Image 1 (spheres, helix red, strand yellow):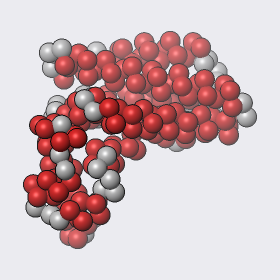
Image 2: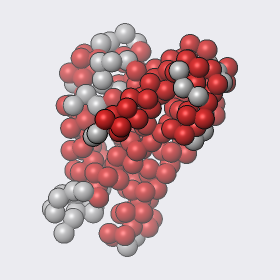
Image 3: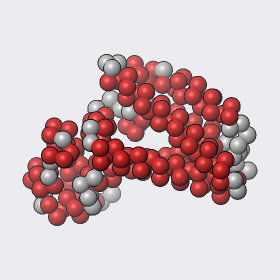
Length: 208
């Protein structure tokens, strides 16, 4: 990354973190884009150049994670099932303390979630993005297997399992456990969850 690209990245990150801090402090609806621009020391137009809408100030940097399961299945190795691919990716995210699964020690990702959960329009957007991710996985599995109904069932089951595990991470941390305490048995809980899913999807979508 060259100097120009680094500066652009730093500016975008500054705007993003400033916006989340203001949303967490005052509420999403109470904060204007102009206020975010002023606090970030950029123009309002610059904010819109980086983030197309006010909602994008919350979602754009994280939207790709809604398709994590689809990406794991698309990139899986020959002989690996869809369940095993999603399981492997999730365990890698636990090991890496990926913010998208709620286990990063820095609380920024949890602050984003709190803003979303406190704002109806953002909760609706999160639901829509989650559905898009599940649909992307279902479309991929349909292409591979030719059965759209089973593909949708499999995609819904896998994304629901991931979502439940992530929600459990957030819940326990909010209840007072440390990130490391939650992470300590996260892999074990994930394996139990995906073992349960695998019983129902045994032998489904094994890549040739």
